Length: 132
Image 1 (cartoon, one colour):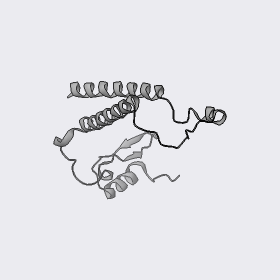
Image 2: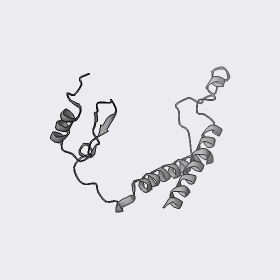
Image 3: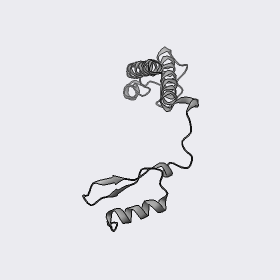
Image 4: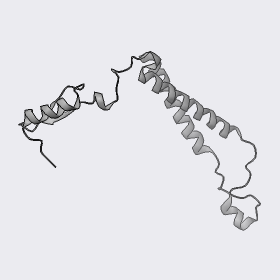
């Protein structure tokens, strides 16, 4: 699994670097606008661009490779389709709640404790819950 993640990460970094280089090399649409004011050129800033050249097509291919590698990295990192679902409920049910102790250092409470027992243990362990 780590081999695939390293390979996809290398492809993603290579695609990003190539895409940055291709974007920087391309000729901008409005680059001739400064010259057109004095020279009478008929090109406009928002006019028709014509067919795509090699640089714009290769930039689109690099962008597609970058997006596919990003999605596959997210899929590999998340564990794929074979991942076991969590113990049910929402994310807030599995959150770790901390309460202040007498020394001021938070003490962890069980992550699956119901809200009523969390409130009761907070009151009994540290005395009154300090207000802000």
